[in-house]
Each structure stands twice: as structure tokens, then as C-alpha cells.
Length: 562
Length: 73
Image (cartoon, rainbow over all chains, first blue to last red):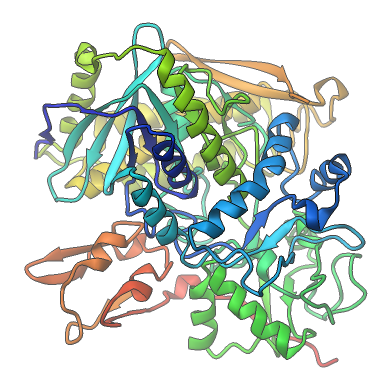
């Protein structure tokens, strides 16, 4: 099979890669600012990615709720589960802009006050103000898609973007995409003055709960680190790849949404695991925050033999139980609800075991500045592929909006660049696609993906790391990438997408190994170096960055921005 | 095979093929085929958006939700 070539580049002002929350928000804002805007989405913007079924927490600062002391808000908000390694200026900006985005979302018809008033629930700490607005995002993707179209943004679904195009000056000028709607894929070239990477994180990098089901992941398994990988190949700097984070939730049925559950974490005898609540009779006002604070309590309790750890909802009221089941719908977890019903599991009697999920590059990715621009001029990034600000839905919305506003000013300052001048780079990619689509037998993408997961788990793991493990791991990743490039084969457009996702994961995996190798200390629960078993105060507030240098990678610490 | 399509109810409109985030479903020979069942994320987009309620979700045994009876208070 040969890829169909679309000979004419599609020319726009602003190219948005990824039609999730961030990409759609950017599309709306850019189109409203008058930019000719095109959103590219590999699935369908109405139901793609992490937000496909919904979300229910929008972290924010609402002056009428939180008061006027913004500095106090900053201090507290940084101590919530999303306040970790990030540049303070970006976190501050996100909180400052959050109320505006909430108003915008209400204008799109998203129910930000499903109970009628501002309601803050979940991810809460005793005695503290709450920062997670409880909203109903069950139709958010459809609403954002409608708003983007209304604003005049164009959307192309079923287009996988695989490469960023930069000109001789290293400036963003376009991208290469692949249409996967039909069995025979179509190669598309895009030309734009500015571009935004707004794709998801890197699921499928580490092994999940069940080796046979690679797509049993907490966040959408279509997210394969492609944003950060493409940015790296385009010359952009990535950040914080050395410091993993891990989510938790129902064991074996891997699904995010821990903060939506109302219950207490207990052991098998019903004894509380953490100190934050008095007993299992918790309410929606203050569910047990132990899992937010003691993030590795699930692993620690299993390793020590004290486990398992259960989400115990047996002490909550009937009203709160009904409320929680409804909130699981808002959060997009309708499958958890359906599973409970299909199997007759009664949360008033049964406790649900929770477990730790694998690292998924949640706060590890593209390094952006205060304009949401990467180190490649004209290439912006927002949402889950960014490595230096985290705020989940809020960050996705705020920085999508901000990147679009900044891009509207930027495009006025740069001349058009005809991507036809990049014929060699485009031909090289076409050759790769056609090689993968060749007739002769070859390796299935799952062979490479599962082996990568094994290597990452054992050599770039989240339990123990060392110079020897990371050095060997990097070598094995490079070998696997070489073999993958020589052996992978795709039967059709769908498999071509998966093959390219694996190649993206491999690029990101190597950058991760190198970043971890050069952080010669132990930091946090998951970067534990047996050869440097201490935390070095000289590395406090130092972010590890990595960028491509020829065929090699170069790391460098930078100061965290205050 | 996680999404199960009832061919009696299905009108082959292709909505599920369009919206599946994982590109799991395909339209072939005027039928909807669950082509890549092990790539299903069980998000239920196809179930929720099917205009004929022709799709139901079967949860594989690999996704067993581990649970245990709470001790009596």
C-alpha cells in the first residue's frame, strides 16, 4: 500500500494540533481574533481524548468565593494536588485568568454551576478554602466544538499530525499530517504562521495493570506523547521529564477521577489509612484527601503487606452516594457506573480497591514561556503536553486561550513561508510512511510498544533508578527505535497511526531516560536513585531540560521561574 | 469485544465510527465492525451517541473492578 499524496499544502494563519479542551478553546479564541484557524484532530473533536465523556473539576480563583487576598490563595493552591513542579508565573497566570474562562464556558452552554450556585467539592483539605469548582462536563466537547465552529474555526477530524515543519531559521512554518479516515492513508501538508501543540500526555509508555490490555489506561490511550516528541524533533526544549507522577484509582479498571469519589481510604478491616478524617462517615463536603496528599500510599501499603487500600464509601449518606454516581457521569466515568450496575456491586456494602497507576507524563513535556510559546518561535503549546504548568482542565483552557491571543499578535510579525521549500523533509517523511506500509511482512506495532513498556518499567522506572539502569535503558530504547524503524509494518491507515505513535513514544522515552540520568539525586517519591539516595538542596527549584543536539540529546538545569 | 453492536437495531449511520476516540469501529460492507476491540478505552462514546441505542458495552474480564465486602460497623 502507498500513502495517497495531497499535492497542495493547506494554508492557514494558525494551526491547532489536537482538538481537546485546549485546542478547541484556542480555536475559539483565535477565530474570534480574526485568525484563519484550523484545528486538526486524530479522532473527532466531539468525543476525543481525556475530556471525551466529561470532567468535573475546574480549578479556579473566584474572588467572590475566595476573597481578595490573592497571595494567600496562591500559597494554598500550590499545596493542592496540582501545585507541584511548575513555574510560579504560569500557575499565577492560570489562577488569575480562570474566572474569565469559567464565564466563557458558561457562554458556550457548559454547566459550570450544575447545582445552581458555585459549588466547590473534591480535592479539598480540612480547614482550607477549596479550589476545585464542581462542574458538569459531560457534554463539554460537543459544546466547545459548536463554539469553535460558530466562531469560524475550521476542524479536520481523523488527521494525525506527525511532524512539525520549521524553516532554516528554526521558526514554525507548518506541519505534516496523515488522514486516517479511509483504509489507505492520505498525506497532508499544512502551512501556517503559527502553530499550537495541544495534544495529550503519553499514555502507553509504562505497563498498565494487565499486559494483554494496553488500552486499559487512566487517561485516553490515544495520547501517545506525540506533542512532546514532535516538539523535541523540531528543536524545542522539553522540561521535567525526570520527575514522574502517578495517579490512582480503581484497581484493574484503570480510570482517573479519584477526586470524584466520596469516601474514606481504609484497609481491609475498615481502618483508616490516613489521618485527615475521623471515620468513614465522610460527606461530599470533605471526602478523605489522603490519596491526594500521600500519593504513593497504595504502593507503600502493598509493598509493606499492609494493603490492599480501599475506597470505602459505605459510611456516606444515600444522598451523597447518589450525588457521587451523578458526578461520575459529569467526570466521564459512565463506564464505572455501568460496570457497578452490570456486576451488581453495591457501594453501600462493598469497598473498591484502589491502586497506583503508572507514570504518564502528566507534568512532563514542552517548556513554554509566559506567552505559551515553546523555544521554537511560532510554536505554542498548551494542555497536557506542557511540562512546566499544571492545572488540568483549567490549564488546558487558560493556556489554549492565551496561546491563541499571543499567536494573533505574533502572526502579524512574520512573513509567509512557502513550505514547498521544505520538499526534502516532506519527501523523507513520505518515504517513512511508504516503508511502514510496504507489502512484505514486518513487526506489528504492539511488539514495539509492549517492549518499550517493559524497558521503561525496568530501567527508567518509578520504583528505583540508578546510573547503570538508566544508561542501559537508554541504550535499549535506542536499539528498539532502530529495530522499529527497520521492522515495523502497518497494514492500513489505522496501523500507520499506531506505528507512528510508538516511534513518538520511543523518542520521548529516550529524552526521559537522559533527563533522569542527569538528575543525580533522589527527588520525590518516584525519582529514587540508588546511587544518589539523597535530595540535593542545590537542585531545589532546578528544572531539568532536554533538547535535541544532532542525533544526541543535551540536558541542562534551569531555574524555576518565580 | 467491548462494544457490541446489535445489527437488528443498527442503521449503519456511521456515527460510532466517526466519534470513537480510538478508531476502533469501521464501516465495512454496509455493517459496523468492531475492528480493534482490544484498543477500546471503554469510554462509552459509541453507546452514548448511537441514535438507535444499538450499542452496548461488554467489560472484559481484564477490567475486573476489585472489591471486598466492608466489615460490619
